[in-house]
Length: 304
Image (cartoon, rainbow, N blue to C red):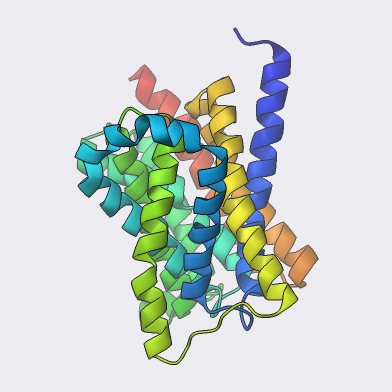
């Protein structure tokens, strides 16, 4: 059993990680009007790749050949799970609030559970099904802005739709992690970051062709890009990997439920975004659904 100080270190790293990931939704909103979304996506991973080359070059040099036989899977995971997710994430910020982005992002664990059932035949209990339905209903509340009649009319904010699609892509990436190559986590992450950086270049080119490109030229834009590239993209990955080493992936994964809490809180404090009653209802449904699906439902499934 690990000493209590190791648990405390892991908890601190995980809370800081989730706080930073929640802040990424705020940074996405702050980047509107400062940097175009595809450029944000490219620079995020370009900055992260530079940091990884400096920090993890020895591990990368020692293990990169092990990744070569798996290059097709790595390209697919990086292009969809990293580039696709981020492109939609930052594009969504131009149309919806940071509160909505953070709450919808909370659906990822439940989407992974759904994918596990369909693609891997994972057994799901009745309580887990209830948790899934409750979480999806919470996302419906956000997407309909508290007016459920809009669901029948399919009158959704395009930013919320892109965020849901982004979560689906990231859930797919998470599922594929079951088959990731046997290399240190930091090396695999470096490969994903490199693929994300390269595969985002065509998106930047398309943005330029459409006349929507905006480079970071102001101090605010540069500061935002350094924050996004170094904290949510790089440092938090180091922290999360360390926390997993200390307490294991199952215990560490539970902390991801803090993102849809920290994100809206920071959106209110930093951006002054208004909070509506439906936001509170949706957040309670999402978090309640995750708890039922991941904790209560999982225990029932194991006992069965």
